[in-house]
Image 1 (cartoon, rainbow, N blue to C red):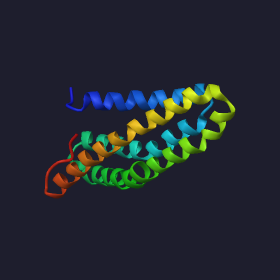
Image 2: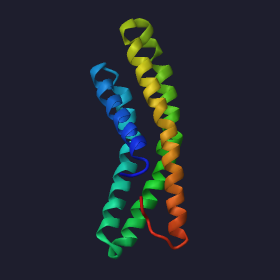
Image 3: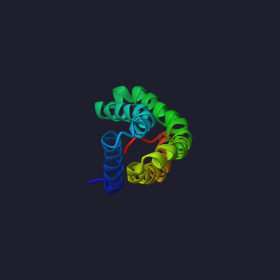
Image 4: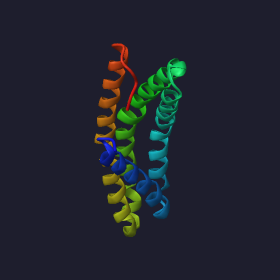
Length: 142
């Protein structure tokens, strides 16, 4: 078991809960926000993991995918995501006032989205450390 297993599990449960909850409560903009801000860097990091599992022959591909992940992480997860949380939260206040039954969904989604921000920073720091280790001649490892 990896040392960040519990954080990763929390991250995945929160993300899935937000996507499913946004669909169930007709707050589709929340689920779209989660998918948009996460999908590209997720594809890149999984492709880098596959490349590292294939061995040293594919090390250039692994480095390219890892670099793509880290480059996309900054604008999508660290800049746009917090801004879009604010926009989605404040922008949805009008419907909450008109439809009081959406109030619980609004709080649930806003808190859930906000909990993902520190996790994004945590994994960015870990990814940066891995990248620095690779630049110094080490291996790309989890």
